[in-house]
Length: 265
Image (cartoon, rainbow, N blue to C red):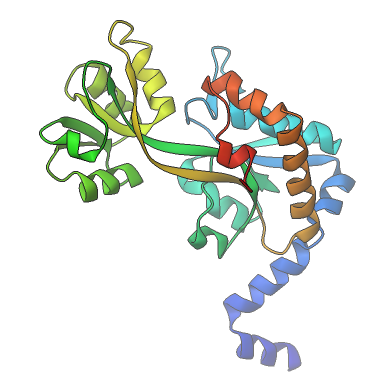
C-alpha cells in the first residue's frame, strides 16, 4: 500500500526517474569496478567523429574519449549514435558518458548533466576570398546556403532575410551546393568548409565572420556528482597541460577557443 501510495503521490514518471537516479548515483565507482567506460560518439560529424579510410572511428571526439578512458584506467567501449540520439542515449543509460560535440544548453541541462567545456563549435559565414563580406549587411543579394532547420538557418533568416537564402536538407548537400557553384557563400561550421576546400583548391572558402560560438560539454546522467567532479578535474588538467588543445588542433587545424582555454578571462 505504501509503495502504491508513493507512486500516486509522485506520479509514475517522477517515481521511475527517482529509481533510475538511485541506480546510477555512483557512476564513477560502477565504471571502475566494471573496468569499462561506455562512451557515446555521434558519428558522421567532420573532424569531430567520422570513419577513416580503414572504416575505423577517428576525430577529435574519438581521441578525447580514448584519452579519457586511458587516464581513468579502464577499457573504452564506443557506442556509435546519430546526432538525434545524443540526449536520449544518456537519459536511457545506453552509455555512461557522451563525447559527441553536444552544445551545453539550458534545455538539455534540465534532463542531463554537462561537464565544463572541453571544446567549442562556431557557426560561421564562409565564402571565397574574392567575395567581400564583413557582416550580415554584406549578404544582401548573395546566394547563401544553409542546412534546413539548424541554428544557421534560423540565424540567417533572422539577420539576413534580404539575402538569397537557399536551404538544403543536410550538410552533405550543402557542401555539394558550394562546390558546384549553386551558392556563393554558406552559413555553417568550419568542418564543412574543410570538406568544401578539399575540392575547391583554387578558390577555397574562408571564414568571413563568426555568428555564434557554442560551448561543448561531456554529457552524463543527472545526479552523478562523483563522476562529474572527476571529469571536470580531468578536463581542467588536460586543458592546462595542452593535451586537449593538441587533439583539437590535430583534427581541426587551429587551437581551441580562448573561451575554452581561459574561461575566467
